[in-house]
Length: 155
Image (tube, rainbow, N blue to C red; front, side, top):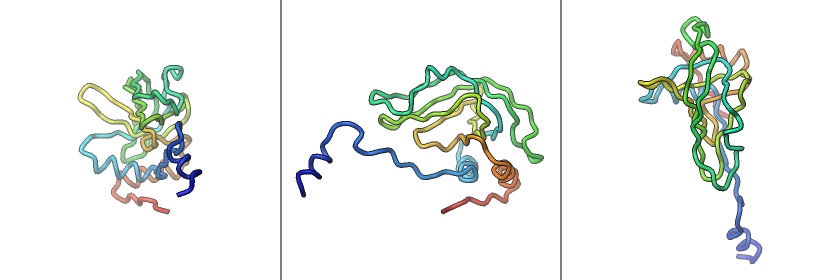
């Protein structure tokens, strides 16, 4: 082993980046469908105090839960036609120094957990419950998934 390789292995700081597998909306639907938790799929906009959210990388990072408001349309068999306007807990989860991020007031396709006391949206360091600026194809795929014809995309 060369000295340069040894130095790289013991160097302080973010020597390695977080590596995430690309997740599609159909992957997320399948995961939510197989979960023991209940989810609602919403096409809408999230509003929260973005100044309280982690920046995405922070050596002293820890999960942050913020109050948020989600306004949009929930998925049903006819498409995204059920009005959905609720307060929820937005949790930005961290994996080591890497934290989940989400933009406020941007068109989103979201997988929101249904709790006994309300709703929660969890955004992990590797995204998988939120898709910014979804295409019409993404939205149509959610209707197909709800009807039992979900095609999980793989590369």
